Image (cartoon, rainbow, N blue to C red):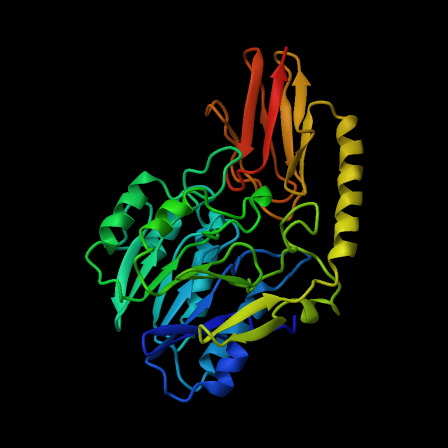
Length: 397
């Protein structure tokens, strides 16, 4: 629980944005910048599993660091998954904690956990005066900020999605701006293909970024993957943020994404540790993850767990286990009138939805289950509406 440094401070100097860690900013900010703003992400208020049983304490660690900065940021941007289960009390808890910040101008976009049942709880607290599903823009001291929503209307097997309405709004929003205007765009799921196999990307992001090609400085901020990754592509700097709650494995280094449990003595060395390299040509800080020492052991534990759960499922032919962000078995054959039960064995919530809308589960937290009895024969595809790369099917004879 002793890890810190889970935020990024963005410094605007002479029209150029550069990034710093909270630790570095605590020693370097001397008031020479035009202004600064800070990004945090993935607070997951309400999470209490083994990966971190006290997410409030680790959130406080980040907020204390922000309050201790010698120059207070103008703005705070939270890039989604404020809550874990989209409960009103979880949003209220976050609001109460954020009220301790000296930074009073705070901006938010939803993560998939924030709209697990619907958008209303998030929207009523954090999405007022927005458009559509919650997108918006504003200007601050010569910089144009754009908050996008890419966690709604997800499709089976797909990635994050902006949708035509939002894309048309974005095109109209930036049309009157001068090409010299610095742009900061922020959303929850990365707007570049970090790892599509885990749903870490946005399928129509290329169209959105196409509207920004004429601008000289574009910075794209995301959360969702719970680790820092950065790349520069042309005029665009992409940056993903750490979580204030728990780590996730590096892309492809484990059977699945999700909360990564590590030993207590490993956690302080795992979260918030980054290698920082100054990029002289861009006057920016490139922040790159160090190797996650615990990934091998964690992957082994998860594979063993998955095998055990598959053995359990084989003795319950009408049960589908949700394990390691997979449906096990992926294809289940039943007879007409037999009931199918899904049981969530993950530390992350999931939501089962038929491709054709014929059945839909409530939000399933750990060990929750959902049952459905088919009333006609055929093959019925389904997916997790929170993590659409998760797909399965039921064959009814």
